[in-house]
Image (cartoon, rainbow, N blue to C red; front, side):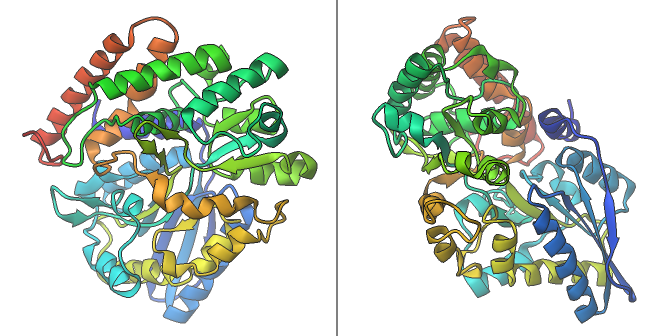
Length: 445
């Protein structure tokens, strides 16, 4: 499977949504700027963004239009526009679009401009827009979304953990007791979808395992990976149900909202939805930072917002696109607020009010400082390729759901941990070798 088709299959399989493009023509002048990005789960964010883009266009004598589409269609749309040599000026991705690096402008100039003004971006952001082997910033990552633990406070309080679990040992202990006493399982996915892939990687990292090292060499087949996989098999047998093998990307959110799951690993999206559905029930949802394992506490950022500019964009349009991206960064307090604290800044100085909002949520959390735990997200939130970058090989490993399948085979009793890890590692080695031969992945020594 080609890199493009693999990446397309990733998000299409994850979300299974049909495209709905809602164009908004925002200004008229000589330079045309068109922006394509996902339809945000917080409607007010898209409303704010469209108005902001309209004002920006007026102030800069640029004709601006914005298309909001379903996440599932972003990869296919970008691939088609690159192949056609025409399309949008700016495209926003939520996972690293590094597989398309050869069809994208080098954005080193605006990344350096942002760093000169605001300092270096957080590592989880730079690792999703910079490719060391080419020494190129192929994207501009402006947002990362924390992925804390979301838990039902009353259930965890009943088994002795009023602040939720803080370690994987406590997750196993408390989750098992809740299932035995109340019949409510916890929800860590083992299916080929986004949240399962994120959660299983979090366990790996916290046990000292990873797909690659910091130099982009494959290190998956290790005692640490085997230990992490065995832990997950025990967690599944003791505290979960077989529904986790058939989940899609919305399943854990739905289960938490319905009160059918005691713990999930996700963003605050389910909680924000529950606030609008049942405020009392939302008050019973708490958050915890990344769980600690033998090697520390790590969790993947949930998604990233990454702007790219295809090569067909040239001249005044290209300059306008770059200026829009930089000016958008200068307005990040508004980005964070209008996303209802979902979007976190890659450049922390751009959102000086975030800390205060986490301590006193302007959107009605009870208690008001419920989200304060997210202050540490920059310390434990990492990228998919951690401790290396999100290179094209890491993207393909993700697209093929190799890690969730590796965990799932052992939980189902189909293989031993040693067998499943060895099988996964062999495929990962093949993928890395293919991309390394194209000069797009480092390591190999």
